[in-house]
Image 1 (cartoon, rainbow over the protein chains, first blue to last red):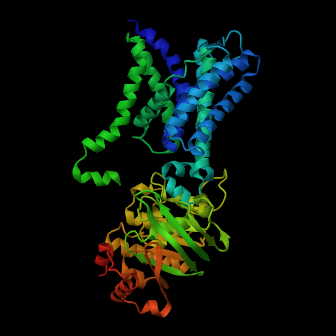
Image 2: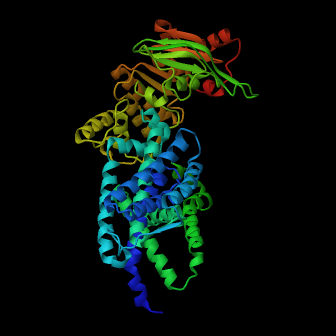
Length: 301
Length: 266
C-alpha cells in the first residue's frame, strides 16, 4: 500500500469534512439546541444541491444560486415546523414526511435524477479539482457561519430559542412562544443544511438525488465526535460549534482511511450508523448499567 | 386584580376516568392579597393555578386579570401578567443555561425579544443585587449552570425570576414541597420577603396548614373543585390547625383524608 496515496487524499477529505461539518451545524441546532431529531435534512441537503446546480446551469450567478438554495432549505424547515407545531405531528415523523415530499420536489427541480455542474464550464466558488483553493473558501464559510450563530444565540431572541429546547415549560412560563421558536429553529437548521448542499454540489461538480441519503447520520456522527473531542476542554458555545465542524473533518479523515485500507465501500453506511448508535447509547448505558446505586441521584440532578 | 367567574374543568370527560377538577369555582383577589390555598389530594388546587396560568383551557367560565379577559390567551401570552414557581425545582429554570441567562430570560417576560445581546453589564449588576438578597452566596456565581445548583437554590432563583417585572399575579404551586424541612423554611422566608417588598398579589398552594395560617392575609380551602372556606383578616390570624380541621369536617361532612397535610401540622 502506498501511504502517499492516503496523504494525497487528505486535503480532499478535510474539504468534504468541512462541508459536512457545516451541514452538521444544522443538525446541532435541532438535535442539541432544540432537543428535536429532524430527519428533514436528508432531503433539504439535496434541495440545496439541486437548486444551486440548476440555477447555475441556467446561467445564474453563484451567489444568487446559493442564496436561493438556502432559502429553499429554509422553506423545507418551515414545512417540518408546521407539521410539528401546528399539526401536532411528532418531530421525527414530521421530518420524515417532509423528507419524502422533498424526494419528489428534488426530482422535479432537476427534472431527472442528477445534474452535472462541471467546474470547467461554470464559475463555481470551489471544486475538488483545486482542493487548496476550496479549503480556503470553506474555512471562510465555517468562520462566518460559526460567528453569526454564536452571536445569534447570545441575543435575547437566541437565548429564548435555547430555553425552548432546554425547558419548554419554563420557557412558556417566561412568556416565550415555544412553538414559533421551534419553527424558527427548523428553518435556520435546514437553511444551513441546504447551504452546505449548495457547497457540496459545486465541490463535487454534480447534484444527485441520492446524495442526501443518510445525511442525518453523518451529521449526528460529526456532532458526537465533535462533542467527544471538545467537551473535555471547554463548554463554551463557540468551541462546541467549532467542534461540530472538526467532528465532520475527523469523520471524513476516518472515512478516507478505511477506504484506503481496503474496506468494502458498500459497508460504509452501515458502519457509520453503528458508530453513531454506539455513541448515542453510551450516556444511557453508563447511567443504567454502570452507575453505583449511591451515585445515581447525583447524576439525575 | 384577579377575577375568576365560575370556571369548570373536567379531565377525561365521558370516560370511566372522568374527573371533575374544578366545579364552577369563583374567586376574586384584591390587589396585594397574599392567599394561601389548602385542601386534600385531588381538591383541584393545582388545576386552579394551571387554569389561571393557561397551561390548559377551562371548559367553562371566565378569568380576568386586571379586567383583561385572559380566558382564551395562550400560556405564553398570559406570562406577561403572571410569575410562577412550580413544585418540581427542575421545572422553573433552564438547567443547561447559566444563572444570569435564566434571569435575563425572566427579565424579558412579557416583552419583545429582539436581536440585541441578551445580557448587558448593567443587567449583571442588577442580578447580583437581587441574588445577594437571597443570602445564598449565588451573587458570585452568575455564570454557573443552574443544573449544578441544589433544589432549594433553584427554587430561590425561580422565585426571584417570577417576581421580576412586578407581575400582576404570583402563582406558587407547593413550591417548597420537594425540599427538605430546613431548606423549605428558608425558601418560605424568602417568599414572604419577596412578596412583601414587591407587594405582589399571590396565590400559594401549600400542604402545610401552619404555614397556610402563618403566611398571607387570606386563606382558602378547597374540596372537590370548589372553595369551601374563605377566611381573611382577624379571623385568619386567630386560626389554629385544630380549628381549621374542625371547620373542614363541618363544611365538607368528611374527615380530611390527606396524610401529608395531617403529618405536617407540627
